[in-house]
Length: 491
Image 1: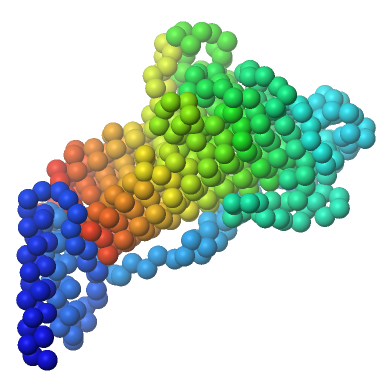
Image 2: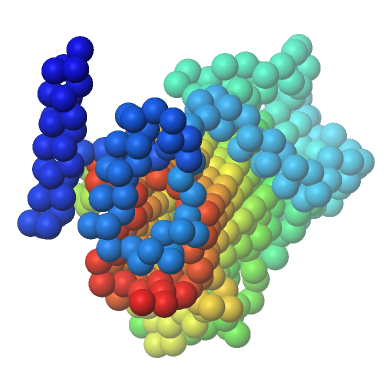
């Protein structure tokens, strides 16, 4: 027994030397380590702590900063448990934004009273309901202020049913009432258009929206399947699938909207109609572009949707992410499930320069309590490339990231953000990376099973506060500092 113990001790010592050697010669994969508690009664626990201490040393984080972090074991919840948290947060956020009792006017029934949905919409007045019976309708629809467009709930239509490949369930009426664009042609109109000035009393509830004609959503002026232009409607319980552009897209309308692009004024002061839609409990799948896109100062509430399998790789670009935010947009993204989009999960960025007077406010989404998993290896699961400011930071809080094919969560290109209470499990790159960006607060995050160091701070990165982060079972140090700065370093 004693000989076996000595042999094992020699093997452990050799492994420790190997770990130190890997980090001294340069980047690469190295041995993982689990963070343990302070119970030193058993020898193997002491050895594990020494291994962690060695990795911490080569990681480069100052000792006084290390002491502010957590050594707890990171045990991620199941995806099902995380989804339950996400959907609860979305439901709570939606409750104050959707008025279900406002429409008390006439019911205009399609096809009983009107042969087409648009015919009924044209005849409707604020407070009316355009009620659509089951069937397939080959139309492009323009909404009107204060009108609710809803599928008929008769015959068990409100029963929630499973959608193949999705976790969310939708009302049965949404799957049997279909608006189909396959007989149309590409134009600047979407499958459903919400024009400038429409408000929250304009509602679309419970449809399958599919087969919008193909177009290149990278070209300015393209349409989305649900086209929210300077409007703030409510869109809920819809299945938005297999469209030839972005599934749901929003942006403001400017005073000089009709000018040619090079002469346009894209500054905040030139906004004519804001865009603050409520996009709640929809499934957005297999669209040729971003699943949900937030552009040009739009600030929608994106709540409790499932976004999956959206890709535009056939257009010759890297595939777009499940959700995209750019050009000064400031959406509230809460409790969504974003998965299996090959271009990444939720991406925020500055956006290309446009017009004579460009965007003059930073892109600054608030991303709370989302579940993001298996979104390819092109981009991080959740990221901000630029965007944010000290006054209007990007906020990434309470998200769950699983099985990222690249970095789990990332800030880069001068982004300014708050990252708190996020969990990252199983990323192929670092769990959380701050690269040439500023983290105002990097607190309470947890990383486990990353195929790289847990946290990486590098380039010209700045971390202004770093407390209570935990990392274990990763390949490499818990924390790696390579060229950035952390406030509070007293050495």
